[in-house]
Length: 364
Image (cartoon, rainbow, N blue to C red; front, side, top):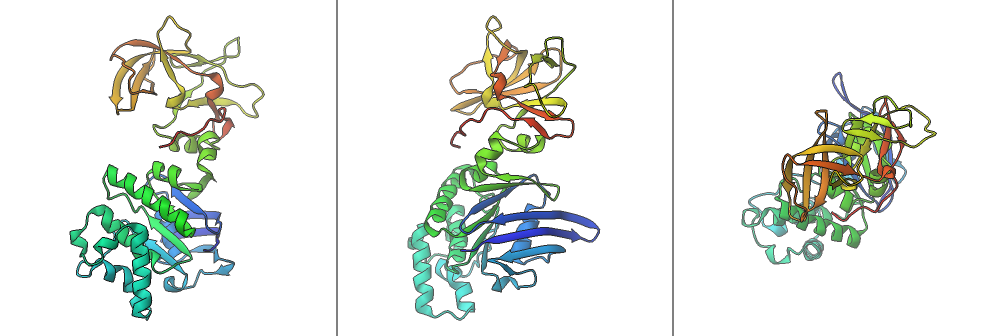
């Protein structure tokens, strides 16, 4: 296990600056996920940690040792790629032990490590097979096993589950969670799937345009986003946003479809509010409600139904998360109710002025 420290890390390709000064620490034994939109720099940052690309500026240290100029093979890091990168002519056992053979490890030790890793990953019955004889999930287990046998100080994962179908992704998330608990090794995980990040990581780092927008535990980012970008990125479906109009005499603000009140005593001028789909409720118009609108469409996902509501008098649309048993009709006029304490308030520059009351995050 190892502690990873990044200080002022920058990376440029020609005149294009991809990473603009990254400062973060991954503690010994911690599982950290990098998330963000495509092109934000998360995979580039992973390649810098691994040593596949050179750092343009800044300092990287593993257990206090500066590793900017240390070759990849000597950093004590193992990387699991999105594409598996298995040798098709080799058996599973040979693929897993290949790096050890190159390092001159004796055969008995190689077999011992390969057998132990295969047992952890439940592929011990496939050691004699070739990669073409395996499913996608089994191939990914082999790729992970190849990293495990090296007994690295740090594991790096570059979107390892993106090539798998939905059911296999769930299965492999469970396998990675089990591996994390058994090995206790420091892990850095890049993903575009926030469900993976929320369910696996001890800490999430949200990147945007080469900068860290926020880092913290999954619940911290969900309940207390520091700005509108993080608020909209963390959570599925993403947070609804409404622009605030002029305040009325009673202190409430006009919004599409009605009025809302925001907390008093804010340190800035509120310009928009956000509320998550799971904190909204559809009600009949004769019951207390805050906003009004019309059902435009619905998505039935089994346990959940997502209702898309066009707000009265505007082109704005809200997404409402409902129980899968709830039936709503298209073009039905409806009221939208919510607890005022569940809104997030943002300033013109996107910074958070007030966060919603913290709630427990549902298991994904």
